[in-house]
Image 1 (cartoon, rainbow, N blue to C red):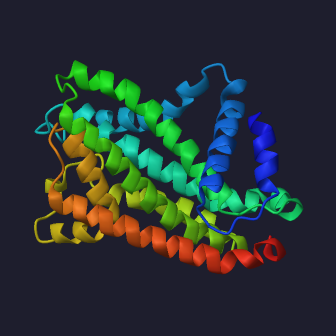
Image 2 (image 1 turned 135 degrees about the horizontal axis):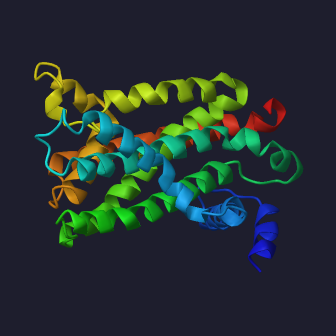
Length: 268
């Protein structure tokens, strides 16, 4: 039934770049891809936990003693690493999504935005799955989820908008310059270590700490850590910055993508 709806929807023109029908079809495609990805796997969706857990083991082994003043360091590190993994996975998959869908784009009148959007939804699914064992770990360390945990929903939404906007720009450019994807893969490790994800921001010399205000990831990770690690609502300043950054990112991403997408088929 869902497959028939996909076929019917793909053949229809879409005037709005993010129409309700486009979002619905992207959801169906992403869910189908998730099932296909894990169907033949022995561990299934458990693999979605592999990357943050491997990073956690490395950071705990190397930095646990160095950051002994950080209470419950595994919880501190994992609260950042899970959301870092969402960022790294989503951006990488979205950047290549349009090029990988070349066959479909050339044969069916489908809005190209479907493919970045479906990649984001798939990455968000993995994020939600990762939060299940993390919630158990929170309870083990005595951080019982409370009312402020509900604020994670708008934070994830804003984070997703930021990621989608940023990635749509790179996905559009990647159609014409395939080095964009490889360049981004090379930059990700640097971004990881330049952002206080697995280490406290106090480690950065105070005279340079103000630079973190210009790192969008810092504000999202800071908000997440306030909720999951400190069990308190994020600072209002972080929330306002996230709203502005997410809105600007999404507007720029949609604007660039819409301007360039008309030439995608000839460039792929």
